[in-house]
Image (cartoon, rainbow, N blue to C red; front, side, top):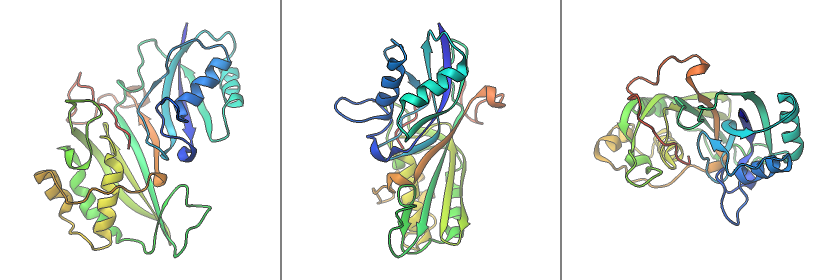
Length: 267
């Protein structure tokens, strides 16, 4: 039986997250229904990580075993024909039987978008957080620099499983201004805690608006508290890429111990 790896893109607005849930509309449930329409009899697909309600993806990675008798391209097209417009396969390939999209992942990359407008813009509002004014880019990047490296991030989220580690390693955390009224945050890490990215974004925006000091990230990581519990809206967040050794990285992120598995939470 062949083992397939594919890149999945979806708009998360109408879904209660990626993970299959009883009585709720999930990306996983819809995708598995499409697979079963083609004759798949597996119990569950494997995924690089779960995204929360309303979060999007352009580079989610999943894998599954399937006894498909036709060309790979025909499988991609057949899946997309049975999927709704807001979930589509971007790329599909055969992979080794030992490949696991979550355990083998070296890094995940998320983008978060925000824009400034006095009223909501319906053409952007599903994919970005609207603010009345753009925060200060320099202040946010100054604070974000304290995220780089390996830290205990319990102040920004919780482990997916009971007794799971809250230590994560961040490789990149940077804001850029993409237009006169829009900004984008890129954060890359070996894995993320539950709601970690959205908590970080909310705090950084507070920094940029001058409502909390630049040192809040540093002190939060050190002391385990920031006094802020709110999340940035889910609609601004997109999982854009999951990196693997075969993508050109010979080793894991610096500081990540071989054989240690970091769960990726719902961001």
